[in-house]
Image (tube, rainbow, N blue to C red; front, side, top):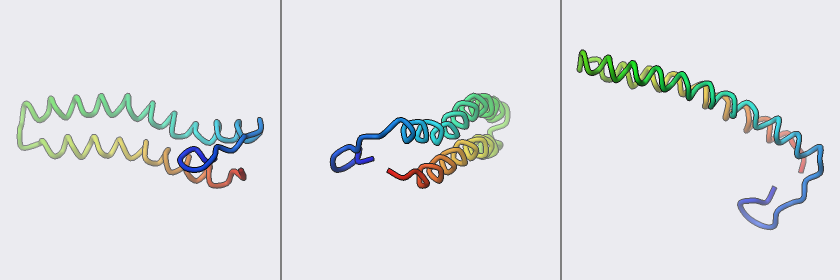
Length: 85
């Protein structure tokens, strides 16, 4: 689209909707993943407070939830590659 370098390209209505729908996977995945990641990380902190040797388990659980947001980002990148501008 030329936003990071060069002159911006004018988009028509169809291309704008394509970009909007291509961005939905990262939006929803980040939203839902963020809610659940907060819950998991809070539980990990409580777990580490009770038993300090379980600290890395809490970090790993939080990172596992983050992978769903990364999957949403990958889906959005792949969908944006198919849009002809």
